[in-house]
Image (cartoon, rainbow, N blue to C red; front, top):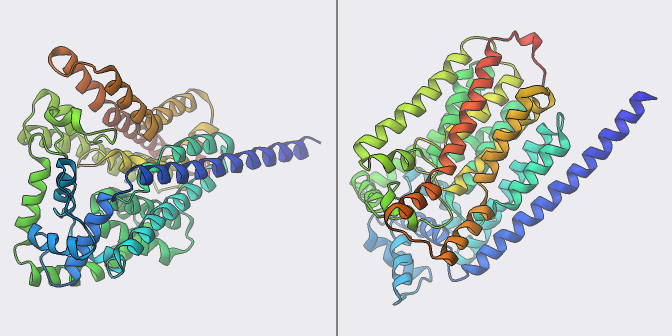
Length: 448
């Protein structure tokens, strides 16, 4: 009688967890729709990607603002006299995307803007929901209810993905590809998803791609197949952009410098910390720049820390043959690491759904490690969620806290430090767990 009871209990937990995932999915869609309605005039990231790719297709220079302005008006954009409107147009007509991104977005750019915007937003919502459900399907084998509760909370706090940043689709495709590689199912789709993720936003998924490459065997083959597909997209795109925009590298660099300049919208330094809104920057530069606000110092330090963490993971790969348990834990580590060396915003950190299978495995093993993992996972998910930061920013605005002197410095720390620290903590924890299992014989490890 013991085993039937256990099966009934497991079935009830699985059913309840499905309800939680459905509620989280509905909340994700509703929050995204609310954000779109609030910003109903235009979705800046969508328009920017659309007109840049459309310019790329129509033999004009997508890295010259004057060319993008012509495409902007031709695609239905309107001149706005108010200061905020002028700032939006300035953002939308300053292309920061690589040629591979423009080529990957090209199918949408062939369509009229309103239809392209609808399909782009729909693609992002569908891809992220699929990625989340795939991660839950793996985690549910070990911890269905708790994994579903964490994922449902995170889905309800991921609506910032829906308005259309390229990174939202890139991270979702990367997670889907990881599931395909790990399950050895829909392999062609997984290779295509990884290639498109790298094409759209390479620094979002490059570390994860590199991790599969270092694993060797079948996983290396999948990584190389993805690279081949990427080359099929990238080579024609680079040849074409070289024809239409022979100085595109310098022009792209100039556009990026305008965004990363002191006080700019993407400046990681303390000068811009109070003007970033609720979608905070995730990389380590925002912490180091608080103490030394010089790119020549805070960039190398950030890169050195991240390279040390990556080296620790790579060295652990070399110690034993990979088991699926270890690979999922390693993927959790590199998912957090991906957000730390280069510029990312909080919506990019939704890649942390890739940590759920590793969390479920460590939680199911019980003991002190399980409790520590729950704390680390909860901190990572909570501090990269949408609503806590939105409420916090609203509270700061309402209280009208001083932004100068010591109070201003404290405010900068409170706004800038939590997300990169949470990601660093998540990366270090799962890296330690990955290295710990490198010393454990594969036969003694639990399957996942």
